[in-house]
Image (cartoon, helix red, strand yellow):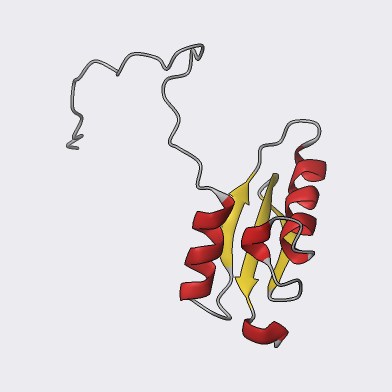
Length: 102
Protein backbone atom coordinates (compact mmCIF):
# COMPACT_ATOMS: atom_id res chain seq x y z
CA UNK A 1 0.00 0.00 0.00
CA UNK A 2 1.33 3.41 -0.95
CA UNK A 3 0.57 6.46 1.17
CA UNK A 4 1.31 9.93 -0.14
CA UNK A 5 2.07 12.53 2.49
CA UNK A 6 3.95 15.80 2.45
CA UNK A 7 6.07 16.95 5.36
CA UNK A 8 5.88 20.67 6.06
CA UNK A 9 5.69 22.95 9.04
CA UNK A 10 2.27 24.41 9.80
CA UNK A 11 1.83 28.16 9.29
CA UNK A 12 2.04 30.29 12.42
CA UNK A 13 -1.21 30.67 14.33
CA UNK A 14 -3.28 33.74 13.67
CA UNK A 15 -3.07 36.42 16.31
CA UNK A 16 -5.09 35.32 19.32
CA UNK A 17 -5.86 31.95 17.77
CA UNK A 18 -4.30 28.62 18.66
CA UNK A 19 -5.88 26.56 15.86
CA UNK A 20 -4.18 28.37 13.00
CA UNK A 21 -5.44 30.99 10.58
CA UNK A 22 -9.05 30.93 9.47
CA UNK A 23 -10.10 31.77 5.95
CA UNK A 24 -11.75 35.19 5.67
CA UNK A 25 -15.53 35.16 5.89
CA UNK A 26 -17.39 36.64 2.95
CA UNK A 27 -19.30 39.84 3.65
CA UNK A 28 -23.06 40.18 3.20
CA UNK A 29 -22.33 42.13 0.01
CA UNK A 30 -20.14 39.30 -1.30
CA UNK A 31 -22.83 36.72 -0.58
CA UNK A 32 -25.65 38.80 -2.09
CA UNK A 33 -23.59 39.50 -5.23
CA UNK A 34 -22.80 35.81 -5.72
CA UNK A 35 -26.46 34.89 -5.26
CA UNK A 36 -27.54 37.57 -7.76
CA UNK A 37 -25.12 36.13 -10.31
CA UNK A 38 -26.85 32.73 -9.92
CA UNK A 39 -30.59 33.43 -9.62
CA UNK A 40 -32.85 30.64 -8.35
CA UNK A 41 -29.86 28.48 -7.30
CA UNK A 42 -29.48 27.49 -3.67
CA UNK A 43 -26.09 28.13 -2.08
CA UNK A 44 -24.60 27.16 1.26
CA UNK A 45 -23.85 30.53 2.85
CA UNK A 46 -23.11 29.59 6.45
CA UNK A 47 -22.04 26.39 8.14
CA UNK A 48 -22.18 26.29 11.91
CA UNK A 49 -20.80 23.89 14.38
CA UNK A 50 -22.39 21.62 16.89
CA UNK A 51 -21.89 23.94 19.82
CA UNK A 52 -24.71 25.36 21.86
CA UNK A 53 -26.30 28.32 20.12
CA UNK A 54 -25.28 27.31 16.59
CA UNK A 55 -28.90 26.73 15.55
CA UNK A 56 -30.01 30.11 16.91
CA UNK A 57 -27.18 31.88 15.08
CA UNK A 58 -28.04 30.08 11.83
CA UNK A 59 -31.74 30.85 12.20
CA UNK A 60 -30.90 34.50 12.84
CA UNK A 61 -28.77 34.61 9.68
CA UNK A 62 -31.60 33.10 7.63
CA UNK A 63 -34.05 35.65 9.02
CA UNK A 64 -31.72 38.57 8.25
CA UNK A 65 -31.41 37.38 4.65
CA UNK A 66 -35.09 36.60 4.07
CA UNK A 67 -36.39 39.81 5.66
CA UNK A 68 -33.76 42.02 4.02
CA UNK A 69 -32.51 43.41 7.34
CA UNK A 70 -29.14 44.16 5.75
CA UNK A 71 -29.10 46.45 2.71
CA UNK A 72 -27.25 43.85 0.61
CA UNK A 73 -30.32 41.57 0.81
CA UNK A 74 -32.89 44.16 -0.24
CA UNK A 75 -35.46 44.60 -1.56
CA UNK A 76 -37.25 42.40 0.93
CA UNK A 77 -38.58 39.27 -0.77
CA UNK A 78 -35.80 38.98 -3.35
CA UNK A 79 -33.83 36.54 -1.19
CA UNK A 80 -34.91 33.32 0.50
CA UNK A 81 -32.98 31.47 3.19
CA UNK A 82 -33.55 28.25 5.13
CA UNK A 83 -31.71 26.32 7.82
CA UNK A 84 -30.95 22.61 7.75
CA UNK A 85 -29.03 20.27 10.03
CA UNK A 86 -26.69 17.95 8.15
CA UNK A 87 -24.53 15.42 9.99
CA UNK A 88 -25.02 17.39 13.21
CA UNK A 89 -23.93 20.72 11.71
CA UNK A 90 -26.34 23.58 11.18
CA UNK A 91 -26.30 25.11 7.71
CA UNK A 92 -27.91 28.13 6.10
CA UNK A 93 -28.87 27.91 2.43
CA UNK A 94 -29.96 30.97 0.47
CA UNK A 95 -31.02 31.92 -3.03
CA UNK A 96 -31.87 35.01 -5.03
CA UNK A 97 -35.35 35.31 -6.47
CA UNK A 98 -35.42 38.24 -8.92
CA UNK A 99 -38.51 40.31 -8.25
CA UNK A 100 -39.51 37.98 -5.41
CA UNK A 101 -40.57 35.26 -7.84
CA UNK A 102 -40.41 32.40 -5.36
